[in-house]
Amino acid sequence: MKTYLTTLFLFVALVIANAQFTAAIERPNILWLTSEDHGPEMGCYGDPLARTPNVDALAAKGMIFKRAWSVAPVCAPARTAIISGMYPSSTGSIHMRSMVPMPDNTKMFPELLRASGYYCTNNSKTDYNLKEPGKVWDESSNKAHWKHSTSGKPFFAVFNSTKSHESQIRTRPHTEITDPSKVRVPAYHPDTSEVRKDWAQYYDKVSEADGDAGRHLKELAAAGLAEDTIVFYYGDHGSGMPRSKRWPSNSGLHVPMVVYFPKKWEHLAPAEYKAGGKSDRMVSFVDLAPTVLSLAGIKPPDWIQGIAFAGPYQNQPQPFLFGGRGRMDERMDLVRSVTDGRYIYVRNYMPHVSQAQRVAYQFETPTTHVWHDLFVAGKTNEAQSIFWRVPKASEELYDLTTDRDEVHNLFASPDHAGVLTCLRTALREHILKVNDVCFLSEREMHARSANTAPFDMARDPSKYSLARTLDAAELSSSLDASDSLVLAANLVDKDSPIRFWGAMGLLTRGADAVKPNKIVLQAALSDDCPDVRIVAAQAIAMHCDGELREIALKTLGELISPEKNGVLTSMAALAAVEALGEIASSLHGQVASLSPDGKAPDKRYDSYVPRLIENIVTAK
Image (cartoon, rainbow, N blue to C red; front, side, top):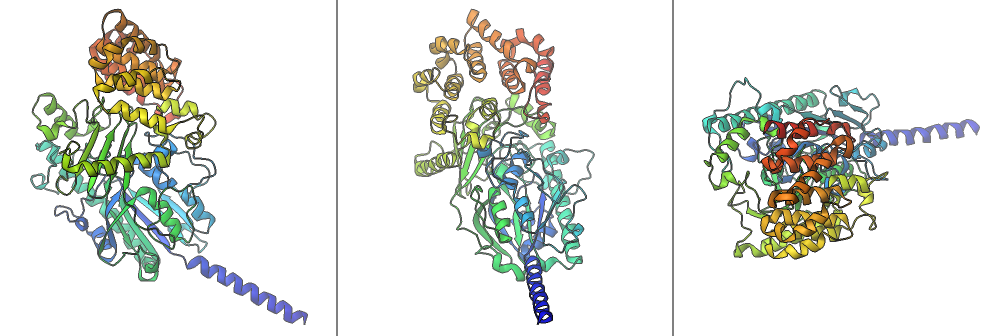
């Protein structure tokens, strides 16, 4: 009897172990092939100039998403949205390389995959704006590979190609393959030989990224795993050309996304999936994390803000996609955008700075220099001038079916008033829903988030009133001259973000708003919030003169040192000094003698103050 029970016990244990092993292998492998800085300029998306045979072949047996959006037009916040499943505007990570903490009780999604039995590898870029909360990957390096697993676990593997990165479209010498005379120059770019050369090189680099994808697909097939593996291919945001990269319109956010589900796993595919098909479903980067979790049989946790578009937990298609722009390296901005698939609405909360703020890295591209010089010389047309003009429009509305380059603003069109209201409302509701913490200045966000994550701080009503702050930001950026009295009243509000937006609103409206309110602006030069002092000082120095201007310049002079005030305050003050040009010439010697060192949220801020100093000193 004892022998029988022992045998029975061993048999049951073996059955259970075998079932567990079978369950482990009876989940799909998932392979992500990603590339940098390129939009849907691919053959499978109908571009006749593109040479992308590998992704085209994947699309022919899989499906493309016609309406896929990154949430940000630059890599770090876009990648941050992917790894967290949350909007970077919600976590406070929209600012380039800002390195804020993950919210409490959340994880980066590969941690959840690993806990469920997946072997997770990343080759090789991370570049998140959120600090990794623990061990995210089993392996993350330029040698990481799914084939290194010896456990028999299903794998989730990412391979990222840098071949199409912005830096590569301007690297010279370059052997041309694409004929520059055949490229389509968008309406916002001047049609010059330099611009055509950059666009042609961009196409060549996208072909190289396609080649990387092809090598990984061949390796998968050679290992006999092609029919066991769900494959995604996508770019991280629009092209690396100026007015695509860094700008949250469709040109900066629209990405290629191709998915392939082998027959074995088609039951996990999106409801509309069919081989060689095209989906009108709108998908966002915040949807990637919940989708992969769903494919692995994991219910996406409540903190995930995206929705799954495949697997057992897939949701119905969403009606809107959202994007945004914050600080781009040394340049601050606040822009939010939304699309319904046909129309795109862009809201500029800081219209006093142009779309083309002088980000040093962007100016390394020949197109940027040529375009800028033509604009300064008065040789650009209306469509080409929008990028450089100050102030930029407070609100923008474009019909992508008739205006693919987004240069004909329908904001004031009576025929589009209903669309405008719909998208404006959708954007405001989204901002409130995700609790967009970035309507605080970056310095204020960090100050209020001491010892916690910005995401968690923003959910404490005693520390952040988003509805009031958003009202103040909308009023500030409306550019309606009749609002000056309300803006002046906001300057004495008890809450510093409201005061900040009050000062910003007067600055953006110019002399007609600043001069009648110079007394309240002068009082703001003593505000306990340095952000308010800086904006008030810039407004006074720009539009007043005499002793009052000198007081304002002295205020800026007290705030430009990163050693004394911290890097974030210094960046804001230096940006104001630069914007004032010769008006602030008395400060240029002080700027030249500054030490760039100061307290910053992370060492990745180290290059920003030096760049601002250089811009001011060399412009003298």
